[in-house]
Image (cartoon, rainbow, N blue to C red; front, side):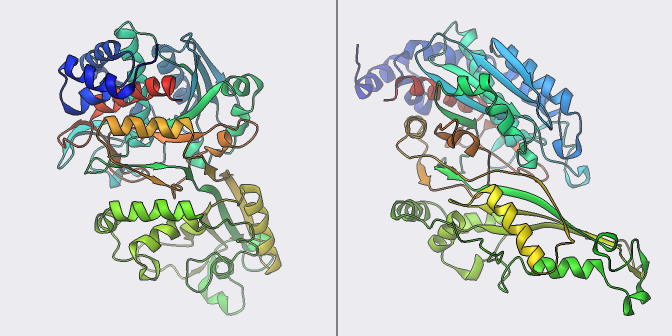
Length: 506
């Protein structure tokens, strides 16, 4: 029997007597009584759901350092089994292992879920508390938060999704959709082997049954609003290494700096190579052919950016990043167009010689730079790698070692896809104002799903808030003092509603 959703919303909202945003969120789904039971289970299970996030943070895996990756994979697999996935399988790759899991609820539709279980490196000296201790503290303006590496990227939101599954079971309710989950342990090194997991025959066959796939997030701003990204830029991460031994010039190791009068410097050699990668302005990529396939913004994308510029605070954005102006001192909307449309070549770090107190008067025999490029449609990871190497070789820098650690293509998903429309519906019911944005300037390996052979719409979804990804004092809000922003319980409820929405959305 078809029930008009607005009629259902009005009727069940009056029935449940739930407050504000919670009432609206649960009234819209067909199984409103079931959702009321699920919300009660979420509230009851909140202490154990908080503890689950803390325990996960305390069991890190750092792919960049090959630190405890097998243990981290096993820990994540156990969490999935505990949440109700009937099949959980370790998936070997050329690098760190991945995970394939399924939950068959006997439903008509299937939803895909992407998890990452690795985290970025840490420098404990930069943190106010130990990064893997997962302390709970109060953050002014936000409420109680868990501080720890991986709190927002992505263990907090992922654990909130698992909390939703625990709540279904505790409430005695079946999921409205089946689930196919794929997880990797190399997202923080640009997913060099994730395609091996996704394209394994059994995984590919399961994903082909999905109506879309999401990565759990929690991106509400202080006013409660959030952005729905229709895509993400693609990365290529690499190192450039200059050495006297490989170059054939300069010393094999460090020598006295006085010898620079008649011995070449590998450090200057690297600096000169780096200087060719961007134009004199310091930000426009100058790699040969870099813009050959770049697609400019469409009229619709410019329209979406204009709406974003009108609805979001430029001053808050500047304050959050600690910047006084954008490139070329461009106005807000123009700067957002640049953010969505322009590829980048960024130096993450430079290491050479002696950097301690005082001078050491050496001529270093080796220099290294860590870089990443962000790619936009219609660039590809393999194209970018080839053009980078050819560019350097053409200019006499072919001796410089190019070590590519990972990368993938940009992601694009149509705004009329079910996975995007479901997000809009859920955010609206929770009173979270949304804007559509052409693509996130950051990256996630969604292109592995959106491109053949999988060819699924993919997005990022989640209520709640956290910040500090890749930075000291990363945090995730568990008890919100901001009435416009959901805490862990609301974040969990949002995933429940999303699954119901995916089950009925046309």
